[in-house]
Amino acid sequence: MRIAVLGAGAVGGFYGACLARAGHEVSFVARGRNLAAIRSSGMRVRSDLGDFAVYPAAESDPARVGVVELAIVAVKTYSNAEALPLLRPLVGPGTMVLTLQNGLDRAGEVAAVVGEGHVLAGTTYIRVSLEAPGEVQHVGTARRIAFGEALGPPRITERVARLEEVLRGADVHAEAVADSRTALWEKLVFLAPIAALTAAARLPIGRLRTSPEFREAALRAMREVEAVARAEGAALSADICQQKLAYTDATSPAMRTSLMMDLVAGRPTEVEALLGGVVRRARQHAIATPAMQTLYVVLAHSARGHAPVGAS
Picture 1 (cartoon, rainbow, N blue to C red):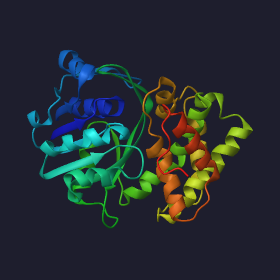
Picture 2 (cartoon, rainbow, N blue to C red; picture 1 turned 90 degrees about the horizontal axis):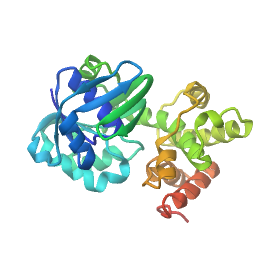
Picture 3 (cartoon, rainbow, N blue to C red; picture 1 turned 180 degrees about the vertical axis):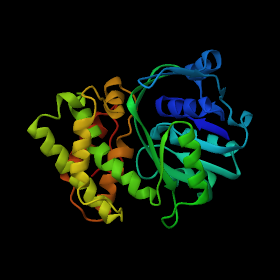
């Protein structure tokens, strides 16, 4: 399969490298030091599952890649305005565009550029970081992608089932789902509160999760996200918050969310994608979310002095 990966950071780098290792024709759309590193030394993965390197094509101009069968969107959400237009030269009549970005609105943003019929929405469970240009560190064994059609009625289409086989053949724990919106909300119930709380504390999860106060705050925030998700029609399991609290307990104590790392480093953050979307939807449904609202305002103002969008 001809595949383009938009974004050669941690997530895009890892999954693109796995697909290249499986024999697919992978091209990265990258820039700067990442582009130079991939061209000179390939994409290198250091993993608890075993280290490996691949030597895919890398271009700054997607027109030099041309139309592909699959385009994976793995850039940070705050880069979408400049990054998503790069998809246009990659997309032909049969191209699937799979977004693995955080938050709830990404599929719509991608569809505005390439058309609704191309878009698949997915979410990933993995612990990866970009240690150096062209070098990804993968910790643990998790490498799961849950994905499906982004729009229309819940169903698993033929192309989604086919892509599931492709990803599994690349040693990715792929799960085709009928309802991608529910899959996105399931992750957000965990990620939005935990990312926000670790970012606010500037601490890894292991320094926080044994505290009764942290657990109470995390559970309260998770329940707020759950309430909004159900109002949006997500078919969550009855004990979703307890599941996610148990998942938090099972994560490595050294786990640092990307939101926390970006905030500490003074980089742009995904506050809007992770928290802003929840808070705005809560207002639309007249659902009180005091924990999430407070975290959103604090973190949005902390992130390089930016004020939250639509904050009152």
